[in-house]
Length: 382
Image 1 (cartoon, one colour):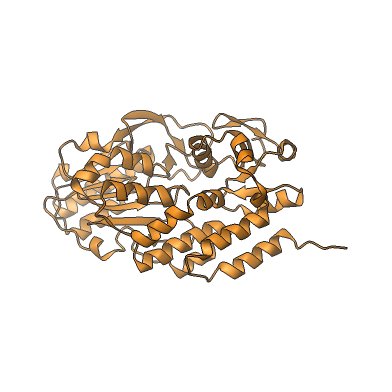
Image 2 (image 1 turned 90 degrees about the vertical axis):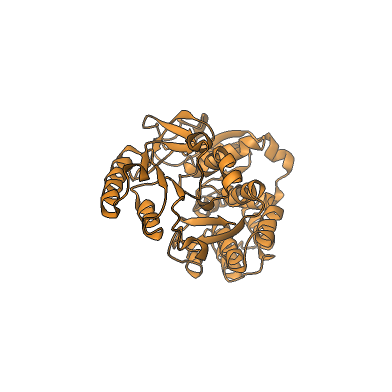
């Protein structure tokens, strides 16, 4: 009798074999091993073009839906085991039960951070699947190699590779080897920033913690800070902190401008989805019904002829629309940038390539500032 090795044991073998590798060539090998494990190596392009099912109706599912729609691949439905979700819709597509999904014969893409559990469940039921990150990275191997080789320094190449491996392996313990503190200020060029003409934009200001750090790093020498925060509760806290900083540092009232809006590609009023923590929200990642409609501004229009010396962005997956709406200012003023690239898998590839196109002279670095998947930051400067 032929005994098959359980899915979990095969995954552990792959994790053990690739966890410590730091050579760039391991990516293609690892992705091939994962495709063989999950069964997606047998998928044809024509099968994918007919449509996919997404396993996971959450924030990653929303990003995957957008990605496949851009690729011209129909999303035929979502699979989600959460009680009460079956029969509802997400991103305008029906949520179907797991048992029905297997009968369709459609490729199943797991749109969840921790994809291993659903993948094992699909394997036990005799199905095949692919983690969303695996598909994106496999299609982008050439672009990722180009980013690593031509845009990043040695430390950044290691950090970038570790981020990619963590998503492929669903093993976030690897982040411990590249963790460092000092988020948004980890590069020497970002340490000391006094400039009486300096203009800082903080996109996703939260409660003003980065604003306060910027005031300290400039020793209070700057022209203005524009702090954008659409979440009403966070905006109230931001205003309290800004008032305190004006008093403590003897700043002009207009030195710190708090703006109750998000930043995006166009000026608009968009649905805003509050996260369960109540501490942040998103214009992109829909979690249930929106908590009202909030303002989005296009940064190029907001700044007009004003300069820009530093842009920090942590906007829950809306970084690409923000940068597209700020492209004129970035091209013209070539500001220092600290941009979060962890919210969407595609941001790890698309954001560096966009910024290279906007400002070919940019030097770039990637740093990771947590022991989990959050807080990967791309730094750019000239």
